[in-house]
Length: 205
Image (cartoon, rainbow, N blue to C red):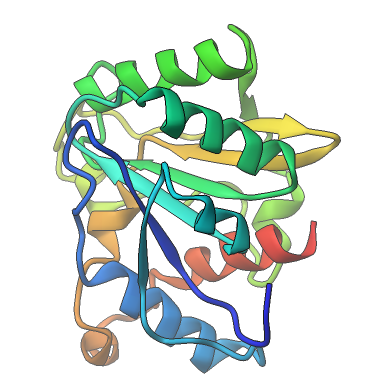
């Protein structure tokens, strides 16, 4: 993966991929602050259809709208995760019945099989890969009744050869972490710490 960790946002032709624009720099700042990983602090935006994604250690995909991959996007997504890549997919709607959720889950079923996307247990190693959590942290979007007005007490994943290849969230972590990292001093608990867990799990599992 090269000498420095870098964050890749996947650009896809359908929907609105360019969301929560401050989140990557916020998460990268947390990796600098809490870990000893060498970090490239500039977000990389790469089209899913571009083969350069295969050089990415960690990919992020999000949005509110339709997810309908082109043939080249679908081929690259499948090949990337089957070759050992990691994708964190986050529903910006926080809504299991929203367009992003329905279309992304349908896309995963088409690529990996109807039952490939499964709930992961809240004692999964993801939750203690760096900081300790007893399951996925709640978000203000859930607690404030945004989206489907539910608190999701689980995350889903597609697992390949015993490792998480696609981590899928309906909790809208992207919007939760979409603030200037210099404002963390106002937070009693830094909510991006779970993002650190996601990255560290992706790199070590």
